[in-house]
Image 1: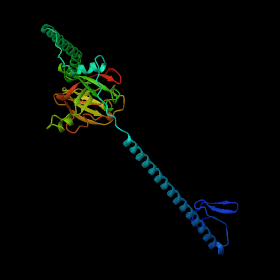
Image 2: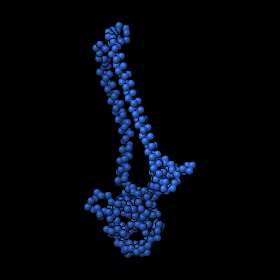
Image 3: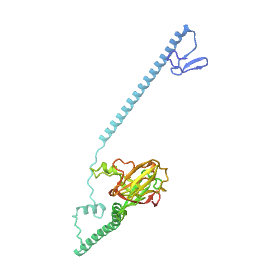
Image 4: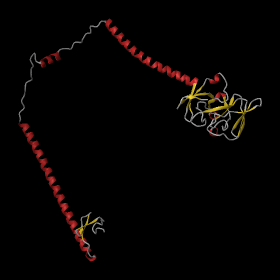
Length: 326
């Protein structure tokens, strides 16, 4: 049921009467023909309440204004009274105080009037020179301590840089192409000096520059190319053929041999590839996880790794565990 005055639906019943929670209108259920009279009566009641509220508010505002005016008038009266009292009070002239000898302020004035004499150092030139020499020694001592602390660190950094540049190669394997020999995410170390003394051998695991990257950036050698990690399968002058996943190598004399594959444990190799005739100073490489390895079989510019692209032979894993890699 809606209020007939304001239209609000929050109507409560109290003692047979219906009261609107919004406007406070009280009414009864009446026949239809008496509805207009009830509505008018309710409206008149609301108007009376509104008029009373307006009158009350006006009276409160008037009282507040009168109180504020009275307070302001009182403040002005007090300020005027204080000003008149100040003007009536005579100002007594006082003579300056003369302090006698012995009083603290007398001594202070006397010291202020006396000229300040510069303190003359009684230090001899030899003593001054000795003191200066001592200061120089202290500064040299501090500098020496700093150098003694930094020198081993600098030497260690230089040695580490030389080792990384000329002796070892450090790399992280981002894929699982060499499972289960090298796990995805392993950090490995390769020897850069290994092939200074002998040629790469079959089954060596090597780090090398990706031939397709090298070919793509031939005009700009400053671009850093991607490094790959694979196992050497075919040597210079050999022919590599893959039949049903099994690798066969034919040497220069025409002798064919099936290669070992006991390190291929993450998958069962399939597919037929080749033959690949390995050029001189080049090598044919495969990943141990052969079904999921982008190796010599699938490169676009060449199927071989030139010896000049080989960084080194993988020797160790140092993270997440330490161990030798073969």
